[in-house]
Amino acid sequence: MKVAYKIWLDHNGKAFGDGPHEILKGVEKTGSLHQVAVQMGMSYSKAWKLIREIEQRLGFPLLDRRVGGQSGGGSQVTLQAKELMVCYGRFQREAKGAIERIYRKQFASFAQSQERKKT
Amino acid sequence: MKVAYKIWLDHNGKAFGDGPHEILKGVEKTGSLHQVAVQMGMSYSKAWKLIREIEQRLGFPLLDRRVGGQSGGGSQVTLQAKELMVCYGRFQREAKGAIERIYRKQFASFAQSQERKKT
Image: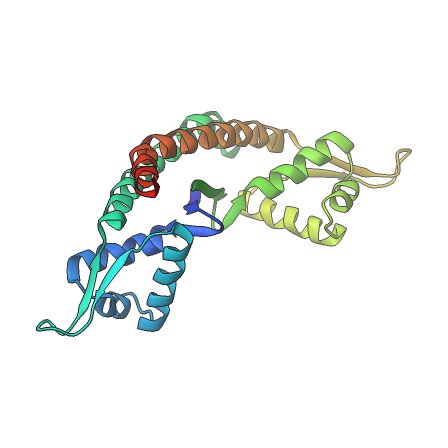
């Protein structure tokens, strides 16, 4: 037996979670939402729709879209999105550690009792 | 913004979570799965199917079904299920507290920065 969970941020609905976090990390690295969408097996239009929905829920832009130019356009993660990503990353890591620690603590006696019943 | 989450126990698939916990608490109180199913707006057959599936995943019985008799039958929570409920209840409460505490801690600076941008 093990513990499983999903955690997300809610703001008038599901506002931010692991999926969007991964997308933003990819854009930060590659400078291209298109490339990240391809890597994640997602259509570019679906990825944009998701980002737009989250921006509306959160009330601030996540991506600056640069159209054309020498680099042929691309996307850049906004400063506010970077702040969100830092907080979310720390939160995610600490919550994961806490949930697993609490699970082990609270189920230690149950696991032992199960083992005794098997033997 | 607030934090939202779902936590469950996994054992070859989703094995136990808040829904089954509520059902068992109801049976413990009323001695009747039928009554609990009605209260939860669930069909009796669906409730039994759920309990059976969980029993198969966990490998031990959750309910003793008493057929007929002076009381007209009913269900009783097994000792192993009671142990599971105690551990799960403690785990659930402690995990909830930890997730909310970690959320407040990690997002305190972000919330302040958001407030400053509004004003």
